[in-house]
Length: 186
Image 1 (cartoon, one colour):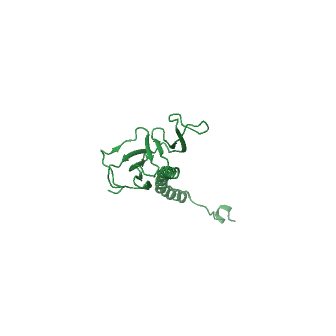
Image 2 (image 1 turned 90 degrees about the vertical axis):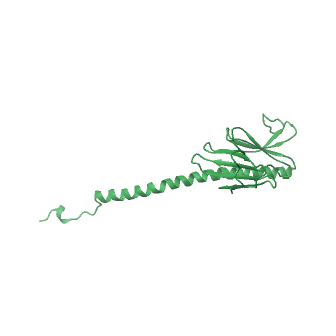
Image 3 (image 1 turned 30 degrees about the horizontal axis):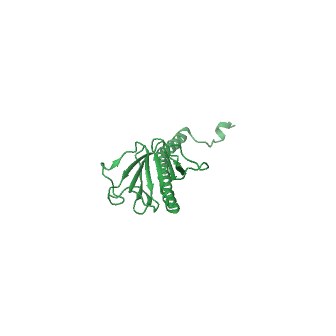
């Protein structure tokens, strides 16, 4: 008579097979996770640059439509920005405490890991990389004024994150055009 242990065969994975499969899965995960994390960081910087671009385009359109100057005040330290219109001081209009004759049209904020640096064009061609002497660090609030015809000064705003990824929001002063670039032409 045969015993149960000899007669029937077990169909199961051995411990070595399970360990090999786990090693393959962990190697694949180690290769994929860093690239996914980098893609998510790139998405954050793209979203911040796009939001800044939309805010500046709104300011341009508001200045042209209202035929009044519109200011964009960006405060890198507070990580906030707002679009303001100078108005008459009327009690029912929302005003800001530091500028009683300014009405806030729009606001924006950006993540803590994003840093803004401003460069003003000094007659250089739009899109040209400013020299280090022309670049000024964003140590305090910066104001970009769109005139009633939509014109402003040439400005390049560098949006950078902690991983040293950069996007550039460029304002062409003559036309008021605002665009996002991954790199500036040299």
